[in-house]
Image (tube, rainbow, N blue to C red; front, side):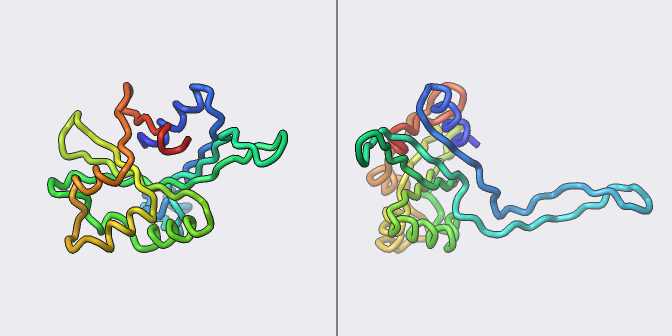
Length: 172
């Protein structure tokens, strides 16, 4: 949610950005009404796996030839953890990492935004590419990535007013 609002803030600042929240694989609960008795009936809707949480296209003004700019497409997956030791590896599912690595091979940026929520009012956001994340996971023997390891590798985003993140460093 915070990352999505951060994209919206960039739009409001005049940055040429398009972002779209992709429907996630979560199970949504909603109510239907029975045709016979008109009472609410609980029903679960399960959606297919998606590539990421957000699709983002930014016009970076990189010219590929005269008068033609090359917009940059990227995918963004948002994760968070309150774990005191580090970010649990189980939080990033295998299909998400697989999609991220595939996108990286095709030259499309795939970012994992990891929120460190251990301390109230002292949240931190670390952004790593899928390739960086895979490299960290391959070099670690634990079930989590220590926060210090993320601090060394990731791009750290500053918290700004309104519960948003300054993610210009990531997308520009």
